[in-house]
Length: 92
Image 1: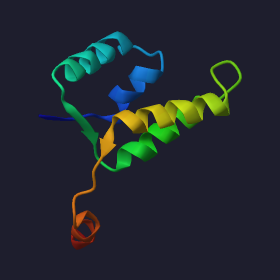
Image 2: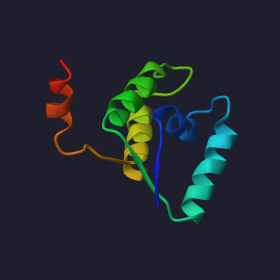
Image 3: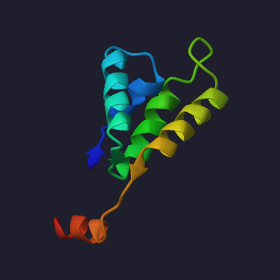
Image 4: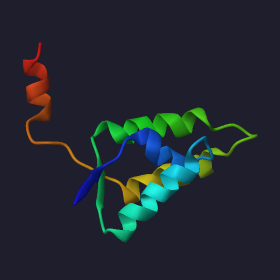
């Protein structure tokens, strides 16, 4: 089966936040069930922006931020449905 994950949940896997423990439990359940973890295309931008906002000396460095983003992008597959952008333009 496939699980579609929101960036806010995935970020809890790498950033210590409220509900991090629950998010990690979800991850463990999905891994135990051999679920495909996927996200919409905007996931990459959302994750990158959130991690970027956390880059500061008291939290973590730019190097650490790059590692965090790369680790998330390795475990969450992003998919863009064929015709997504054409369909979006048709909404205008």
